[in-house]
Length: 204
Image (cartoon, rainbow, N blue to C red):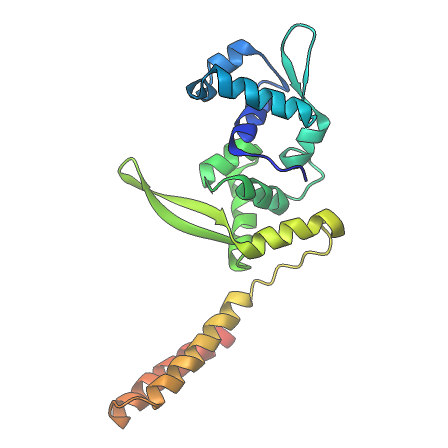
């Protein structure tokens, strides 16, 4: 996959919004205006050099098939699109939905699958006096999506039980620490019993 920066993503997203073709007016009326003419021109030139956009005879730009392949190709699994997007920038669910143009219901299934496999992390962040769930890719997620460049998408198996295995291991460690602590035996037994019950529930 060709690597994209956040400005690259904004420009290509604008192109997708405008049915594949955008011009100076579209740029002027978008949030990209905040960057200033110089940075926009540099970004356009860079995308053109990397064959992500092409210049039309009327001065407008078209997104290329090469660029569409990154996030907007129906042959790419949704989970892979999510990882590719989060590799560029951390996003809220609304941003993921808007950029990938996929229903939130479908996205949530894949996002949860990625989160349970510890490829993606969700953390609440305060934005404009409200908490928003922000998703970011973890090192394991970067490794997984990079691996698909060579192996394709069919060899990826999501281990949703991975996090549960780690929790079980942590419970065992806590039980060991309690047994080796100075608290009275009755309390030790009580805490260990509760942790063992929790462990048994996770193992079911």
